[in-house]
Image (cartoon, rainbow, N blue to C red; front, side):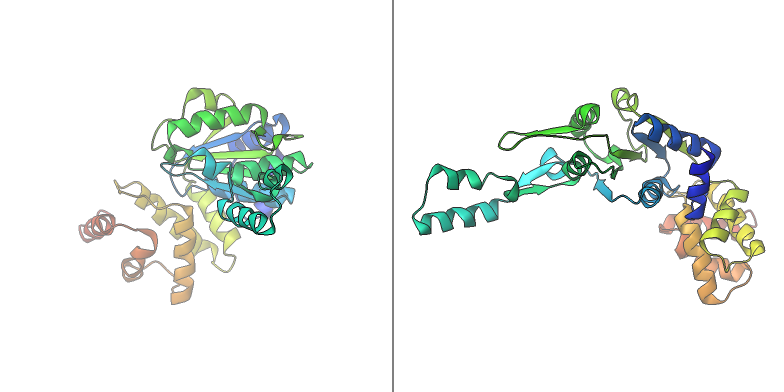
Length: 286
């Protein structure tokens, strides 16, 4: 577990003990890691860091409403198949072998889930990131549950492709809807919260070394204050780092009222949130 935390820290990700334990268990037990939390707390980055540590490819499936199996698993390259059929017809050789060829692996387009299974079938252990599963429909969630149980895919025209070992799977959710208990039970679960001031200060210092510790702490404290407000979209750690970089570009060495007002658009992305913060500051309560 300590080695996991240290490996993450070497790559600029400051993981707390709870996350370190969960990652360690997911790797050792070969179980998917299910990460829930607000947007911007570093869920997706966990998968990227794991891929870098393992020196394995990161295969990402970005979920969205209406995502179906074809776009997540595989689909046939119909354009190439039609071209092949026309070439066969033009040559006058239309035996069954020629027709069967167009239903071979050569004409199959692998999507992220099949890519992960094929890589694992070849002896590798890629990191499969299933990002923002809560955006997908429940029907896709049911299919995913089946896939995670055995990590094999049956393609009627080709056969069954099975992983030698399960890939490293990281599933993220922003909790816009509840994920079914059956899927969560197959995973190691971890809730990721916003970092406290000390940890966020450390994150800033490691990711942007030329920001001094005093400025880093002021930024972390300011972000904690912003997240305590009833904002439509509270800023995440990515916005903290963007803010630090923006201040370096502007040559600002302290968070004055003028600097904060000028750079609110770096951390807040909705007009209502910007107006709320400015009104609180004007009233002396921000």
